[in-house]
Length: 77
Image (cartoon, rainbow, N blue to C red; front, side, top):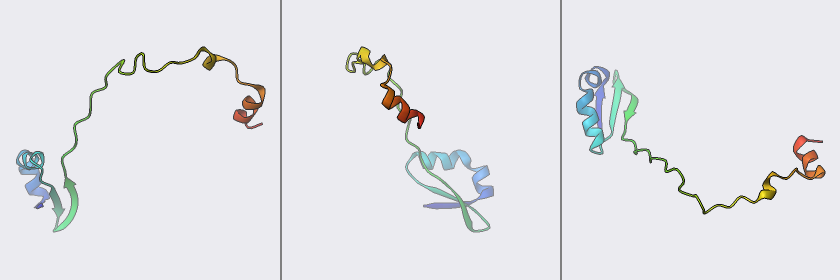
């Protein structure tokens, strides 16, 4: 793990990011005390619309009114 001071981090950010992309961790220190750590991040998966289309069936009864007893429980009565 590479440790650099704040000034080095500011002047060599592009190089440090390249090292992080290659799998290294970089610690940024102020007066010798670690302050932050640069680590790689996982790419965010793209959402896929309609991926579950046809696999989930919502019954019409979902939209029926709740029974009075259950409605009271939800309302805290």
